[in-house]
Length: 208
Image (tube, rainbow, N blue to C red; front, side, top):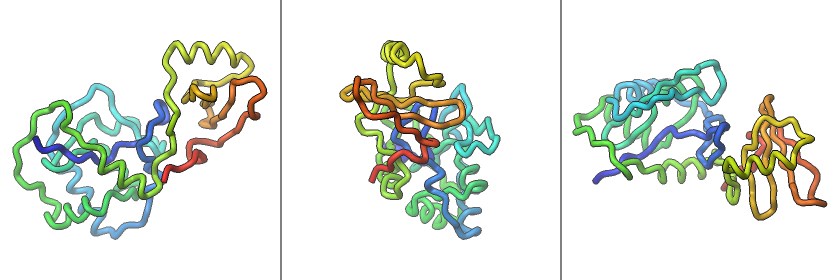
């Protein structure tokens, strides 16, 4: 089975992960190349549809970025990816851009694969994004389970946070998210370090 190489999977502030932040991939692009990529991204057929729509990570007001995955038989991407390239100048891997240009933005005929476990391959996307410095360093951090989040909340009655974004069990550190998008890294262990405030995820260390 030939796997489909993923493009355009993004960091989710609602469920923090190691995927890239598109804000860190903004770069000038030749209009000819950008237009060719946008045409290609929008021309591909649908592979699968989801119930919930995606939203723009730039908070530009786009709340329905589509709910489909599109594919050209080699790559696969969400149908909102063209928006990032066209409106926000997000660049994609050079290898994909060359792939588009050699085909003059035309999707070559192919047999649409059946949806199956293991069909998607996100390793090349992550490897490229990390090399661009677009991924956050979330090693050893996990999204808390419901029970762990409840236990942490009982220890943080003095903090009016919106949610517990991440936790680190070995040091009992937690990352609290606030309504204004700011973060606070706290150590629950008695005698630990003072809380560290971050304006947002853009201040989180980048993985290299």
